[in-house]
Length: 211
Image (cartoon, rainbow, N blue to C red; front, top):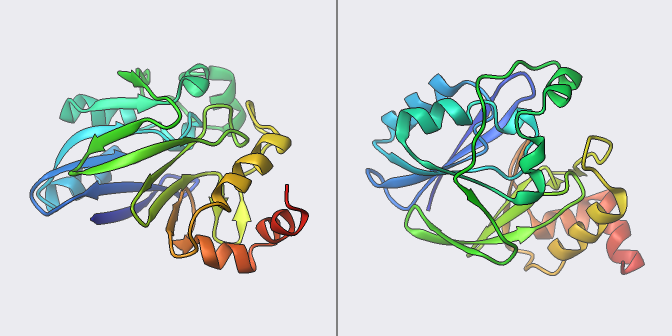
């Protein structure tokens, strides 16, 4: 699996271009900003965007989605729990960002759903807490964690749709995964379930308490 990461926008959100092989189809995960940078990179890799997936609906992960969708004709997917966050003018104002156009999903995702994209199968995990419709994607030994889990940290839960109890429950779901699973988060560097189980303060306490 080819996983190309771009850090985009003022929030330095991770946008992932995921493909099975060079010159094939790809999926773009969380095109948060800088659509020209994203589309240029796709072209450099010789890929064709067939789907766009949003791990959640916060503006720093979705702002470039309308432009990428318009340029490629790709299907745009999100969990229904975050549909209401899309095009939310109050949230955009709160975070100091300006809309690049309406974000219109083509498909709403279910927990446990298998997505066939970029030559691979991805399982949707509904992991609310950072937002009500936050999801993770799992394929083999790879996890795209959105803003649920970071290297050495976790997502905030004080934004609209956030919930401390739910984010802790969702983190508990990740503790059930194998240590060797590589984690590609919504911000910051790559990590692994094992590294976070051993060194992430939040996960260490969660594991200790057995929540």
